[in-house]
Length: 87
Image 1 (tube, rainbow, N blue to C red):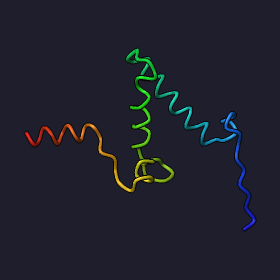
Image 2: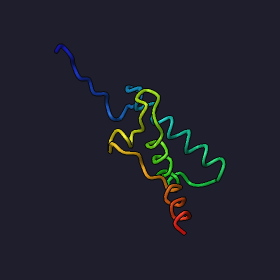
Image 3: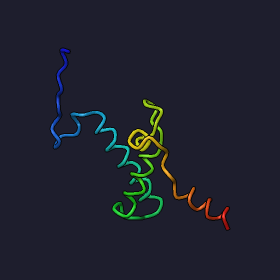
Image 4: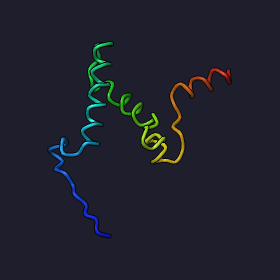
């Protein structure tokens, strides 16, 4: 096919634009939450990652969660809403 696969060093994410962009997105999200709520980043990392994984990307039109599992994620607010409707 005439293609070659090049793998950047894992210790130098700047060599890979997508990894660098992902890291910047996560860093900015953590910083915003920290500034608004004065929470420590380890306490909110899982929520930030869940939010990132469930938002559709402009390039694929699908969320990373959907691409991996072929279904939409069940959001905590959906669970709460269903519990309130059942009551």
